[in-house]
Structure formats: C-alpha cells, structure tokens
Image 1 (cartoon, helix red, strand yellow):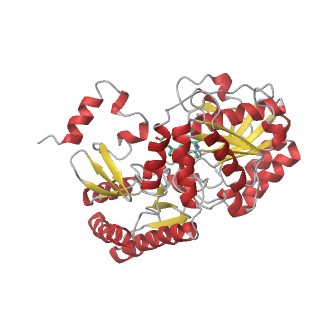
Image 2: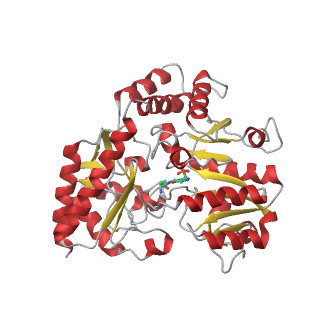
Image 3: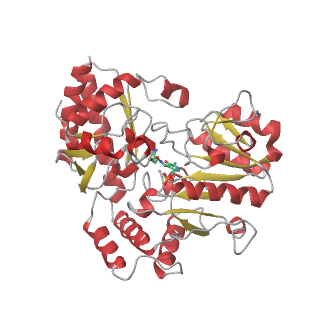
Length: 428
Ligand code: KE4
C-alpha cells in the first residue's frame, strides 16, 4: 500500500504526541482510519497534506463561522501582531471585547476573558461554589463542558447519588461532588433538588447540546432549570462555548428568552484563536479576584492578537441578515440530506438550529441521550468515510454537531447533498 502524506505524518506524529493528536477526537478513533493533516483553509474549504480539498463542516469545531482565513480576520491578526504578541498588561482590545460581549448577551454585566472553553467553565464552577459556599454541582448526561476535573464525571446510580469519574485521574472525592442527571428530563431534576438542593452550588448546562450530537431540549425544561435555581439559591450556568453567537446573535439565552446567572463562551469569540470567557451577574462576578475571594488568573487571558481575531469575527456576524442567511443555508443542508436519504431509502434524519446541525442514522430526531445512543453509529461511520472520500469533511464522530459557515455557497450545499445521495445508496 502506498503511504500518502497523511499516513506518513500520522506515523511520525505518534512518535512524539500521544495518539499523534493534541485533542482526542482528532485521532479518528471513533470512525477509524487515518486523520487528515490539514495544511490550509479558505472560506468553506480545507486542504489536506496530499493536496485534497474538502468542503468543511467541522470549522475547527465551531469557531470558523465566517469561513477559514477570512481577509478581515487575517488582517486584524496581522495588524495586531505587528505591535507585539502579548504584554501581560491590560489592552484596549480586551475592553472592546468585553463591551461587545456585554452588549450582545442578556446575562452579562461583567465578563472575564480566558484562553479556552475549559478555563471558562472551570472558573465559572469555582466562582459559583465560592459565591454560594456550597460544594455540589449538577451537570447532564451527554453534555461536555471541557476537561475540568469536576466535569469529567458520569452518572452514578439513583437520584442524588455520587457521580463517578469518567476519566482516570479524577479523584472520587471530586467526582462525588458532581450530580449527573438525564438531559431534558423534568422529573429527575425535581428529585435531585428535593434530595439535596441546599448543597447544590450550580447547574451547568449546554442549553442546546452539541457534544452528544445536536440535541435541542424543550423550552419548558430550560425554564425549569431557571426556576429551580431561583427556588434553591443555586447559580444557573449556560455553557454557550459552542452555541454562543452560533445559533443566534444573542446566544441560546437570546433565542429562548431565558437568562442564566453566568454564561461561559469560547470558539466563535476567538474566531479560531484561543479565547474563552465567563461572565454574568455583577454580584457574582465581583467575587472574582482581585475584587473578591475566588481566585482565577491567566498569562495569556485576553491576548490582544487572539482578541483581534475574535473582534473581527464578531463584527462580521453583526452584518444585516448574517444569522438569517446562515440559518437558511444550514436548513437547506439538512433538508437536502434528508431528501437524499429518502430517495436512497436510508433510515436517516437531520436537524439544525442557526448555523449548527446534527445528522442521525435513526427514524426520528433524538430528544435526549438515550435516543442518541440508539442511533446507528456503524452506519454513521461508513457514511462519514464515504463522504470524506468524496471530499466532504464532517465531524469524525457520531456524537458531534456540525457547523456551516457564512462562506458555504449554495453550490457547496448542493455538492454535499449529491455526494450524500450516492453515499446513502452505497450504505443500503
Ligand atoms: P475547549 O477547552 O475545547 O476550548 O472548550 C471546551 C468546551 C466547553 N463547553 C462546550 C459546550 C464545548 O463544546 C467545549 C469543546 N467542544 C469540543 C467539541 N465537541 C471541542 C473539540 C475537542 O475537544 O477537540
């Protein structure tokens, strides 16, 4: 078998990097095969080390909402870098970013920048615990909030029983302070708070889930999270690292009209560069050092070059009709895929919210974790590779959402749908 550049690079990478990648999902272990080593992105497309072009629906897992290498974003980065890369001192760009986020998200009165979504969520949890003086947090099965110890926890048995580590290296003493409940399930929420609400510092939730694939919960359930936190004095955290400025100009909180106490952000606000953020109610955020007793810090927090990329990206999303066009494009993709599957006789469905979508080898759109787990993963994996061979780059896992950018053209969508119909026929 001739070794292509991807194979050669993957073999070489594994000699010095665990599994050859710097983040596990990139290793293709869920779908099998050799990951594509990308060398360039432009607009809706990426190119691999063998020079092959792909229409890209990963978009760096969400950040590339205006497309890869947008001239405005690249120019902003270059201009900022010309003045130096990092100072470890305040800069005006960070103030502009904070003002932009506060202006666009209903929940934000104060906001602090960090360098990743993980930093944002782990800081928000520490802040909620510091603000309430309580030890426990509630998260939901199927939701991912980065790799902070308190969040690498899977469901224990029973209502308010202790969570169990979902990763080695997380001490049970930490895991058992996390309660894991079923997503989009009202009864389980009531039982958990009835059993121990006075110990619960916060609920953290993906208000639209994207890390078990796309799952849209009922508005009623989100409203119940809000009222439950109000009743028990717990902090409601919307983890909008993925959904923030992806599904709506004002996040899920703007889409559904439910305001959390804290919001965590990432991805789009960095436009592909390392930026995360956490923010919310002034009385909570004023507990953060150096104002208050909850410590949090970061050498590159608010890095001016990264913030320049984020500001340029967010500015582009404020163009008139940006989100309407993006949502219509994404909807045309999922409707096109569903139509192709129907013509090919494949059991398949798809869903979209704003610029985010989910594809499922199942008869109906999943509304929770169990329904996601019932989807046909093996068929997804075969579909993934058929599409990759055809030059379409979907997320290399049946349990991830997909992303459309403003750079995807109608022709890109039509080409994707045509390749999908062929792939569905070969799946039969
Ligand atoms: P980062 O630390 O990866 O910047 O953000 C963690 C995070 C937090 N919250 C939500 C809702 C997220 O989706 C993420 C990260 N998302 C994954 C995609 N499933 C990043 C891709 C990866 O892990 O390589």
